[in-house]
Amino acid sequence: MIDVQDLTKYYTDFCAVDHINLSVQPGEILGLLGPNGAGKTTTLRMLTGYFKPTSGRISVKNLHIPEDTLRIKSLIGYLPESAPLYHNMLVYDYLVYVAKLKGIIDPGKQMERFKTLADLCGLSKIMDKPIATLSKGLKQRVGLAHAMMTDPEILVLDEPTSGLDPNQIAEIRDIIRNIGREKTIIFSTHILSEAEATCDRIVIINNGKVVADDTTASLKQKGMQDSFIRLTLKGPDLKAARDLLKTIHPALDIRLTAPGEDTLVSLEIRSPENKDIRSDIFLAVKQTDWIILELVKESQTLENIFKKLTQKEA
Amino acid sequence: MSQITTIAAKEFKDYFISPIAYIVISLFLIVTGWFFFSTFFIYGRADLRDFFSLLPIVFSFFIPAITMRLFAEEKNVGSYETLLTMPVSFTDIALGKFFAATAFVGAMLLPTLAYPVFISFIGEVDPGPVVGGYAGALFLAAAYSAMGLFASALTRNQIIAFIIGSALCFTLTILDRMLFFMPPKIVAVIEYIGAGSHFTNFSKGILDTRDMIYFISLVCIFLFSTHIVMQEKN
Figure (tube, rainbow over the protein chains, first blue to last red):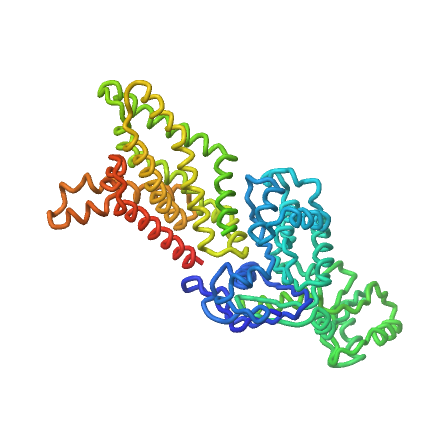
């Protein structure tokens, strides 16, 4: 559906996007993750034809930028970051304007489309309001209606939930998931739980480079591999606890987590080969008169993967 | 084509939604009205010659004020991104905005049609220079609008757009009054480049294709430059 090869963008001598390769399958929801300034917005802006790439190739359904930019633009519905709209217009007037520009001239068809969009994005109550008076969440919805005006096959959303309150975030996410059933969606975010909850595939960008490109499930799987056990004991001092644990397996990697109360020892234990040694620990501790307060297996969250990938180069 | 009209209609309406239109039009009428009628009864001539001779200077400040927001505001608010990612070509956008500005100047000139009507009560008005003058005013408006549009495309700051636009228009306006300082060899060229002599021909009632071509070329040059700026800016 979308194929991006060696996409590069320089702002004078600052490299914002550095040889990015991406491909998006039809019907996929792709999450573009990355810290602020990683190049997410720049990538999306090039994809939607707003910025010219310094080099590289973008093709959408066998159409190429820059030759077919205009036709690609009509295939893509784009919601820019923070949904910039014309503040002096009414929501209805704005939608009419957008419809006309996007080629829906017939007033009957316009009305039909507006009704669908009003239901989908929850606009029916604000149709007659000036855009300037709308809250951020409502503006975002108008922006979403703008993006979906022609029912495009591809939706590109740049941080659709940034700056919204938790309820609005949930609403926007629901909308995305609803329309994502039949459409290809690319959206950028830096909220990980959001990407995890909505995306089929996640691409993590840092300093203009792709540092991870995988399905959400397999990224999580990778996190599972690097799991550890959190153990909190009441009774022993650190050395005694360490000695006991070494009897289970001498090669255990034992680290003291936050030094809590004097009587408590909190440890992070990593076993080689990622074996689950919880039962061994329990049996070993049972021999003593110590008390187990916590014994949990924790896998690395997406958040940790993200941190690892995006901080290592900085 | 329909996209040009859509954009033009939207931009034209925008002027009247905000207070800009009313402020600019009133100010224009006050300024031209005062300068024209303050000397009108002293000369005692039933024509609009003074009004038209004043027009290029007035336009070179009013038209950039009208056009300054066309691109600069959109860039500042960010709606430029929404506009450019819709399936609309740069040419359509530039032309739409250009027609909106020119039409607005036309609307601004409309109330001044009362002048020839009132004057015709006082004395016999020769229709030729009046019709020619208004035709010339529209050509001039189109050329200056294109220049203002170009200035607006250069920046996201409306004040800078206004200053660049006025500088361009003002230069063309006063160029043929500066001939005195020019080396004699290039006087003819400079006079041709300046807008003054071409507009004067119109306001004498002479509709010369050379003058029309001059203004049309100006429009084309600056619309094309706008197009280039739009393409190069991102």
